[in-house]
Length: 233
Image (cartoon, rainbow, N blue to C red; front, side, top):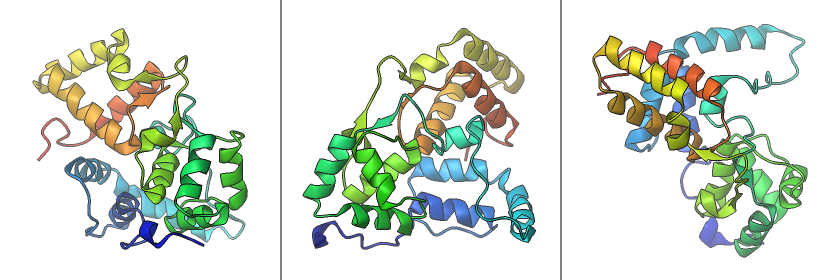
């Protein structure tokens, strides 16, 4: 039996995901977002108009049996936390303990995640709890929200693989890119770095990452090409 104290009273769809889907569809969003999440949605809106056409082409393919897999080397997918990160690992023991404390079965947890739009089965949850499978950071965040806990409480971080965004931004290659960007835009390096860090932390809902400087550079190049990125409203 599930615990009614842990039932969600709002929409079953994660607010950020709801806003993202609205943006891709070209509709205004009424989702309840933080200021950082609204900033990220505004940035994504600059390149989102091309997505519906791509999705329509996929729908038109009669042989298409499911959604196209997310490419693990796609910097946008990495930015959104949609691919597994070896530096951000779900703790099976903690998930199992908190799930039981919430009065949820494995099937209950899987169903609530499905309602939020995540492709999760009971077998997936079993694999997490036995440390046989990791989940993308965005999925881990969704698990934490269902369980009403902080994301950090269900993470086990590999110190040999993980680092903070601050450390990643200290890389010489990243520093050189930001310095050039600053000169071209006449915006202080510190402002460009802090705005980028804020969007990245908001997107992945975490600060720990095993992303490489090359991945971060690809993401920053996307940011640089977004209109008005240096001067957010």
